[in-house]
Amino acid sequence: MDVLTDILRGLRTVGSVYFCDFLDPPWRLEYEREPRAIFHFLRRGRAGVEIDGDLHDLAPGDFVFLAPGMSHTVVSRADDDPRTLLLCGYCDFDFDENDVLRRALPRSVLMGGQELERWPWIKRTLEHLGAEFMSGAPGSELTVNKLTEVLLVQLLRAEFGQSGQRGIVSALADKRLHRALTAIHADPGSDWTLDSAAAVASLSRSGFARLFKETLEIGFFDYLTRLRMRNARELLRTSRLPVADIGERVGYRSELSFVKAFKKRSGQTPRAYRLSGADEA
Image (tube, rainbow, N blue to C red; front, top):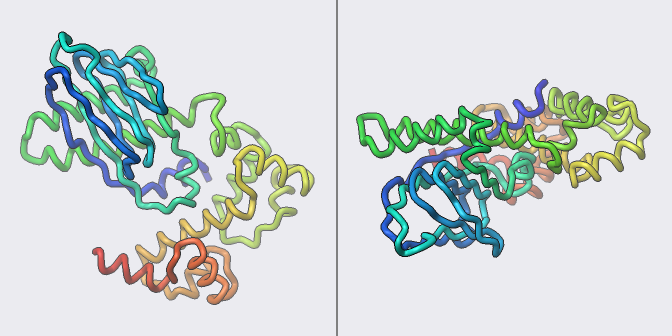
C-alpha cells in the first residue's frame, strides 16, 4: 500500500478557474479567510501577493497556492506597470477539519518561474488551464475543472517531495514510521494497538508512541480514528451497506461504538450523514 496514493485517493475535490484576464493598474484582489483553496498564476506583467503580513513580488511564470482559510491579497505593484494577465482558480474539498489529508496540505506555496521549471507538468497544466479558460471552446468548462483537480494532485506530489516538511511528509521519510503507516493504511480496520504498530516499526511501545506524535503532530490512535472516519464517510456515500457492516469494516466491533465515534467526529450519526448525501445528490 502506497500511503500517499491512499491519501490522494481519498481526495474529493471540485475545482475550476474563475478568472483569467488582463488587469489594468491599479488593481487589488482581497481574500479574507477564503473557505476554499485558492491559486494564482501570473502569466504576464507584475504583481505582489501579501501573505501573513509579508509582501512577495511576482514575476511572469510565478505560481501561488493558499490552503483553505488563508487570507491574502494580490495587488498591482505600480500604476505605470504593463497590463497584467492573471489566472485565478480554486479547489473546494469534501473533507472535515480532522481529516488526515487536511493536515497534509501546505498552508501556502510560492513557486517562482525558475523553480517551476523543476515541475514541468505543473507548468504545462497551468498554461493549458489558461488557454482552455480563455478559448471558451465547447467542453472547455469540463476540461478546466478536470485540469484543476489534476493540478492539485501534482502540487501535492511536488510538496510531498520536498525536504524539511512536517507531518505525514516527515513520517514517510522515516523508515520505521513508513513501515507502520503502510501497514495501517493497508488495513485500518484491523485491531491495531500501540504494541502491534510498534512491532511493525521495530520500536518499543513507548518509543513508537513518542516518535509518532513528535513527527506527525498527532497521537497514534487519533490518527487511526481519523483514517477510519474518512473510510466510513466514503462507504456511507458510495455503498448501501448497513451501518453496522460499515462500522465493522472500518474497525468497530459494535454498531453502537461506531455510531458514537462517528457522531463525535462528524457531528451527526452515520444515517444522518448518508441521508444528507442523498439529499444533495
